[in-house]
Length: 169
Image 1: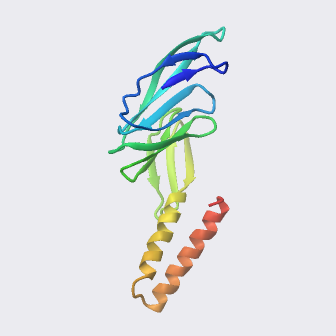
Image 2: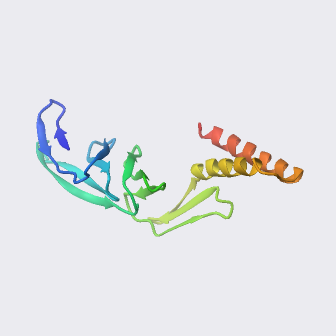
């Protein structure tokens, strides 16, 4: 990976040790860079500058681990407090990069994910869960069902689609 400044001058070259690179991203704040590939973790690198704004070095900020296969893509949220990854192993992960997470739990219906840490509880909509529910109900509708089950599955699909529409999905 080559780090360039806005004037087109090469600042540094990093060996990513990825074999094949799938994607590379810069955080919205411009402070962090990452590359994904055929490895199961991501090394988040920080581009460091002196107080006068001169380039200093690129150092490892932290690792994002937990996948069992290569990572296709990564995305930073606007304030770089969360990073999401999607892997070849069929899973996605959400990392909280500022502060600590002490506990996570889905509600009984699977509609929400509760995340506890830093003296706050965050409630996240399980958008992927809604799509998974639609897919599961659609598969069940393709098999022989009673009329009551068919009605319930269609209602579940409709409710999930209405909810996803609120999120622009």
